Length: 146
Image 1 (tube, rainbow, N blue to C red):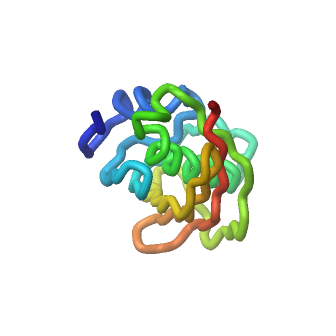
Image 2 (cartoon, rainbow, N blue to C red; image 1 turned 90 degrees about the horizontal axis):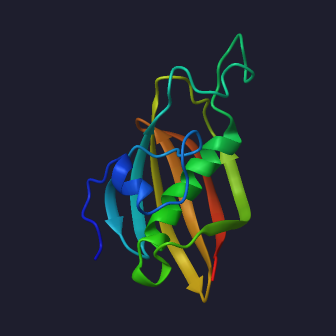
């Protein structure tokens, strides 16, 4: 049975294998299994990475923005009945671009549209926005553990 948005962290933990401090989604607001998903993540003021990235100018690392986009796409794939309880691993990141700095206290709106799935391998186009501003985009390739 597909959960109906909005989904909070408790429901997200039921779909994704990620846990604190690496769970980078707070809510799912739109979900069409195997097709698209929209999520949000409020960047914490005290995120564990800010102590070193950067002490004088805290910035959410780009790699964590990409990870949040990937977790968003993983929800669309792992919520499907045949993938329940599995793990979606990164297989590639293409055409990734960062367009704006993401700071503590800002909220990322994350979207992923699944473009193609062949067996356990798939690809999705993902974006991360702060308000109306594009923060990052990329094409993510994943492999679902079988």
